[in-house]
Image (cartoon, rainbow, N blue to C red; front, side, top):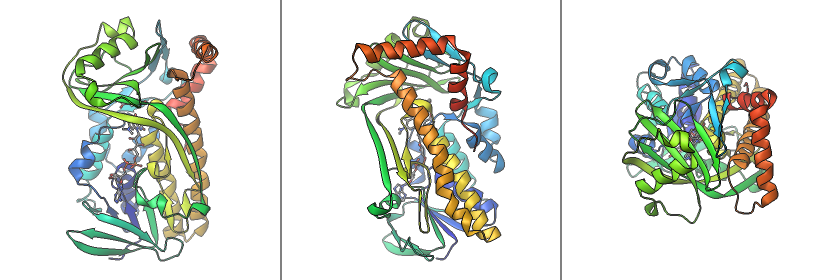
Amino acid sequence: MKTQVCIIGAGPAGLLLGHLLRAEGIECVVLERRTGDYVLGRIRAGVLEQVTVGLMRRLGLDGRMKREGLPHDGFNLADGERLIRIDIEELTGQHVMVYGQTELTRDLMDASAERDLQVVYGAEDVALHDVDSASPYVTYVKDGLEQRVDCRFIAGCDGFHGPSRQAIPASEGKEFERVYPFGWLGILADVPPCNHELIYANHERGFALASMRSATRSRYYVDVPLTEKVEDWSDERIWDELAIRLGPEAAANITRGPSIEKSIAPLRSYVFAPMRYGSLLLCGDSAHIVPPTGAKGLNLAASDVYYAVEALIGFFGKNDGGAIAAYSDKALARVWKSERFSWSLTRLMHRFPEDGRFERAMQVAELDYIASSRAAQTSIAENYVGLPV
Ligand code: RFL
Ligand code: PHB
């Protein structure tokens, strides 16, 4: 097969990119290792910035999001005693959208056939070839048969563990990494949320987050040491821990119920730079990871896609080779700011095992400063709603 852009990975980055390219008349194909059901079974992000909502609107695929998504005007930081509300609407004039990554992915998936976006699920052994040339190609195995896609560009949208980043010689890029000494244990349950807005809590027993997917579905997290196993956390144990860490006000409103999903996600900050090598453009988690504390991962994938589409339209539509050359710097400028915000919110809201009395005093002082300063709240709010693309 021959196409203009071969996209590897049908997560949110790959599907968004595929749809946006098709809308511009650029030919592409998406290769995904898993089945569609498997991709939809991964419970991940819940908070969308305007950049992500805006791309769905540009595609005309925001109908269900507008009906079922929950626009949030604010969120809360809890320090064990009080709730500090960050009024993002008042401070920035914008809001975030609570709408699950699963739902966004489903909307993109459902629209593929009618919009002539070819997605190959169950593509095994995907391998990239000649990425440093102007005629790269991708091979894969489907139903036991080896296939080949010749293209002008490859978009690596295959997440942190995919083959795209690995296709770049080590000497051509730099890795920046911080691994955190804890993970987030998440629970999804069909119960009403304990609060109408999100609560991020820093308690002496550790971090907790109260989030949601809808008025009847809640998503909660507590941080746990990396040595913990999900099997050791019964639903009751998680509910008990949440009730303590989120504080008495939220605890009084927690409705308990059986978990429909429960998993531990390790926390990491990671950037690979540059995000382009020859004819390969990296987008989303394949190039960077943020700890989930700032709700930035999916949104960064969306802003990468925004810049990648701009670059590819420049190349195919306007014969502008410079657009491709500019991609990495443009994307990374935004990536680094989101990395910084996610790292600093993680630092502020978690108890690190190596922290002593001084580090704890710094957290208390910072939370107190945020509680009393409109300037500090504005800075958090503008990062949380998402910096402009
Ligand atoms: P994905 O979603 O990992 O998709 C990559 C796709 O590539 C496929 N793939 C391959 N395909 C072909 N051949 C191969 N060899 C392949 N290897 C992999 C995979 O099967 C998959 O389908 O990356 P993408 O598209 O870059 O999207 C990134 C987001 O998924 C991620 O950043 C977010 O989920 C992060 N995240 C959050 N982001 C937010 O913006 N807001 C949030 O509130 C938020 N909460 C979260 C999160 C991530 C979490 N976890 C579990 C890591 C909460 C959690 C708990
Ligand atoms: C979620 O609802 O899964 C969620 C919300 C906010 C975050 C991370 C995850 O910062």
